[in-house]
Image (cartoon, rainbow, N blue to C red; front, side, top):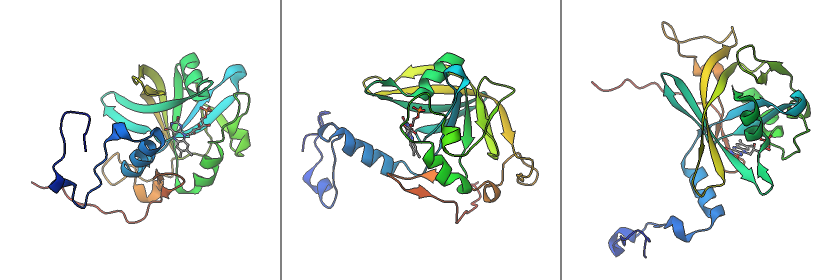
Length: 218
Ligand SMILES: Cc1cc2nc3c(=O)[nH]c(=O)nc-3n(C[C@H](O)[C@H](O)[C@H](O)COP(=O)(O)O)c2cc1C
C-alpha cells in the first residue's frame, strides 16, 4: 500500500497490522481514529461572555496544557458551516475565557452544555448552572466548579486546512474550592478529591478510578 509519502510499508510489517494511510480515509474516519487513540483527553469547559453579556458555556476536549512559565493552555475550536462557534467569536471579542475543570459530579450537566444552540441561548441556564463574573478576566465561570483557570487570549493560530482554530490562553488566575486538598508539601491538587473526567471517543468518558503513583527512575 502506498503511503503517499514516498515510503511503502513492507508486506511483513503489514502482517497482523492495519496500516492506515490517513490521506486515504474520510474525515469522519480520521476523527474517530484520532479521538479513540489520543485518550483520555482533558475537557476544557469554556465559559465566555457573548453579545449583550449573555453567558456562553461549552466543553472542548481538543484541550491541553502547553506550558507553565507562563501557564499556557490550548483549545482547538471547530468551525460550523455557518462560521466559527460562539466560543471563538466571544473570545475574539472579549480576549478572555475561563476553562472550568469538569469533575465526576458535573458529567451530565457538562454534556447538556454541548448542545448546538444559537448564540442567544444561555447554556448555563440550559443546564441549570449559574454564571459568576471572574474578577480577573472578562469572562464568567461556572459557579460551584471546584477548579477554574482564568485565561486571557495569548494567541490565535489558524490550523492550515483544518476547520479549527487553536486558541492559546494565558492563565492569569486559578480559582480553587477551598475544600480541595493539596498533596502534602506541594501545590498539586489531590486528584482523588478533584475527580477530573477525561474524554474517550464518541460518548465515552473515563471516570477517575484506579490512580497509581510511580516514582521516577534515577
Ligand atoms: C466532551 C465534549 C468535547 C468537545 N470537544 C470539542 C472540541 O474540542 N472542539 C470543538 O469544536 N467542539 C467540541 N465539542 C462540541 C462543542 O461543545 C459544541 O459544538 C458546542 O455547541 C459549541 O458551543 P459554542 O457554539 O457555544 O461555542 C465537544 C463536545 C463534547 C460533549
